[in-house]
Image (cartoon, rainbow, N blue to C red; front, side, top):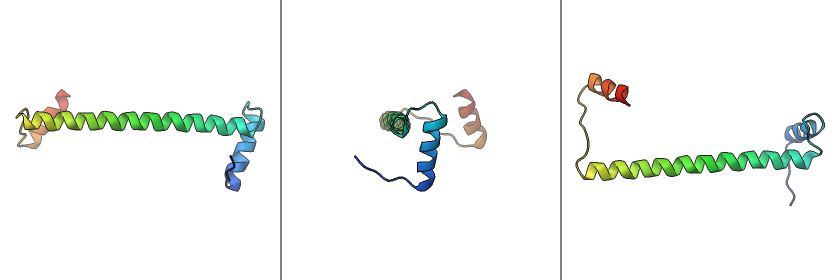
Length: 82
């Protein structure tokens, strides 16, 4: 697999390889990809949780399980209880 880096990123990778405890630039890139993968997995999990919460909310609304807040004070009180 081949890929291109900007000169700035290439410099950063080489610098990390020499001063950051990595044996070579490939190790730096592999570590970066592991971190990116973890970040993406966390993002997807958060999105899935949000979608589940929206579905639960929609279901509750369709079953009449909701509160109507008619003032800023009521809204503030609602959020204080969360």
